[in-house]
Image (spheres, rainbow, N blue to C red):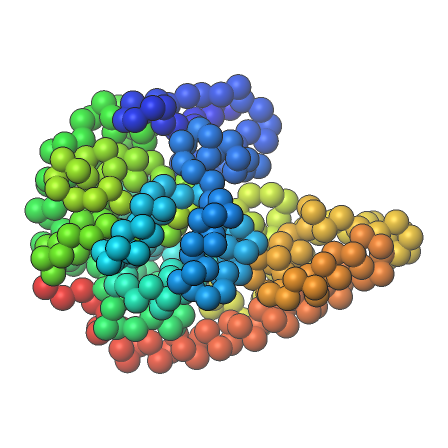
Length: 393
Ligand code: TRP
């Protein structure tokens, strides 16, 4: 098995390395996440910064309370977040930028960073630019059609809007439809990234189609679009999973040459799927919970989830189970148990064999289904307002 792993060393020299392959070897690229992800190693090898207590307390100064996703370290790493906060303190706002590759329906792993983005938007009073990369998914996936990726862009936007974003300060960019808006900025970016850098960063091969080779310039463009739209030059802060980092590395290298701030990032982990290890992934529907999954299906998926439980109830009551490896426990940890005391108690009971997996599963299915039911109602209403979110120029 060949394993490719992208990393940055000092400044802009970017290297691709292939570490010793092993069964559970980690792969983290914008297109593939596999194996057991070692986040400490990603910080070291991508050259990002850990989110320190000091930075977290700076954030709390503005947000009042640490968001669950920061508290539980779902967001764990950054680039230039300190710079952006310092500028903010001195009166220079920032804009938020994130996006989605619309290759299929949205699962709750996708919603997680968007929920955090909404929190930042509300607390800092900033704009959000949201890129729907219907072009990227078309280029990358051999079987995808533009009709299909554009349809998913619309469907996925409904999920985004359902979370509570407001049209006044949320601007969705659909790449194919809005390319006229992005094109001049994209060209400025593309002209300054060499093929050699792109190849080293993204691992392009001779067989890679040329659309894909050019494409990273399109993901860079929204970092800078605010100036074109408003005349204001402010930095962009990007909340996203860490697999997107290669894009920002090349973007950061050229930003100042074009007269912009380097885009800043705040990186999150991958929400695990319901199987053994790995992230929630649309390519493994049985271990992913999609927003449109009916309640019975959610129950079934949860019921089949991987836990740290024992072979029999009797054995588990006697020796306890292991929440550290349990996919169900992770959902309580990252999303569905905000109360620290209750979380610790659940963990204790699990280890002591006082609670069995069925109980945790049933309760989680209940909470998930309640969340999804409300989400779907708001998603339905989003159909009436979706146009208001479409970026104007
Ligand atoms: N490439 C991302 C994906 O495949 C989509 C995307 C575009 C994005 N711009 C972004 C994600 C900015 C995070 C932040 O999902």
